[in-house]
Length: 106
Ligand code: FES
Image 1 (cartoon, rainbow, N blue to C red):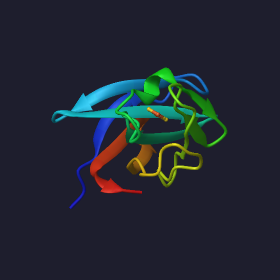
Image 2 (cartoon, rainbow, N blue to C red):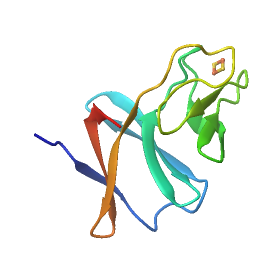
Image 3 (spheres, rainbow, N blue to C red):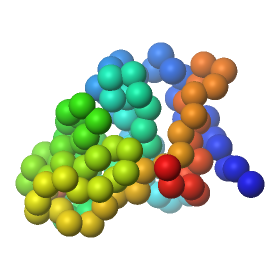
């Protein structure tokens, strides 16, 4: 069973912008990585710092506190010091909206 919820219109975020939101007490981050939408956990796994304060580089997001990169598609850390992945969730674009299923990993 899918649990997709609409979280933004497709024109709400410009390329390489992001928007933090909460769903059922979880902090999530919608990212427009050059036209490709991703939803990932908002908090860095290294020291619980908001990735919304970081920046998007290609299909990766950089934590601005210590510089770890995470792959937006897989959530895998690409650079130390973070060594635990963040979650990247299933996303679809339909009817002019971006939808996420926060119960399902990509
Ligand atoms: S808090 Fe993100 S890399 Fe340290």
